[in-house]
Length: 393
Image (cartoon, rainbow, N blue to C red):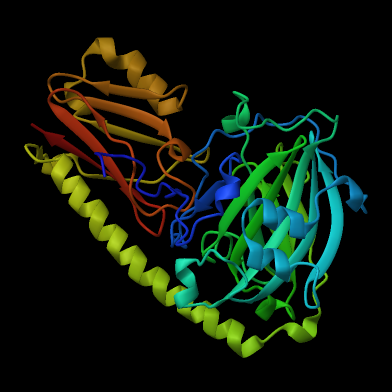
């Protein structure tokens, strides 16, 4: 890991399946993503791809769509070279949904869902622990009929979506496509983007209530509202972006409370182990980066963000020259972002905490502030208190 890269950046592994598509797919562009096998329960994750420009008007409608205009789920799986999954769709046990939501410029159709064991030709590493998987087929198109960009279009890499399961009663930041060992495959045909989402089996939660969400970036805390009392999850109507949400009509009798609780316990244990490893990794990265620098003990400050979410760090104010008064004033009132380093070690720093830490992130900030002689680093604890430290070469 390079110095001060995003410590919680998602790991996207391209074409990482243990088996490969048939040769007849050589002319097709098939995208496969494999997510990081863990997500900090205290940290929000964001997609690393470029986000869609925020939409000014967000409207939602749910209607049945004409299936003959789209590929069938079986055909979607066939186009992705997954013969076993193609055979699973359309058979007894699959859930046909066929609902469409229009969100801003896009039309999102949730077509079909199937759950079971060894349904796909492409084995996911998580199946060794959680052998049952769920697969959902979706189609995404533009409302005005403009074709979705194909791989040869420069806009292709600028348009990205995340499809995620949510469980009623579980905060979506804690249980989602990343924590549930998710993956996705997609392609564009005849102007329509077809996607298959897969994750650990969600049917065990059928007695609680389930959702499928579609986002243009992983911004759960803003895109959706979670009701702590009822456990319900709803779209945030004020969110300017893609935040489709489908309420799955699963048979509650397919739920298994004991199995679901055991699954949640296992996820929690794995999460704790992963978090410990990441914390150790962060510490080692920080030690490596600060090699050659010495901490100035009197520079250590505990900072609580003000009412508008900004932090203020000032070191050696007594040495500040009269010419620095305007900088100090701007920093104190939070008028603008300030990173001032004087050769004598005077530091004046003011910034929005959201620019330094991901939401609910604990640990070191992924960004340091430095000149040739000094380095200023920040960390945050579970109570939200930020600590600033200045190091000198």
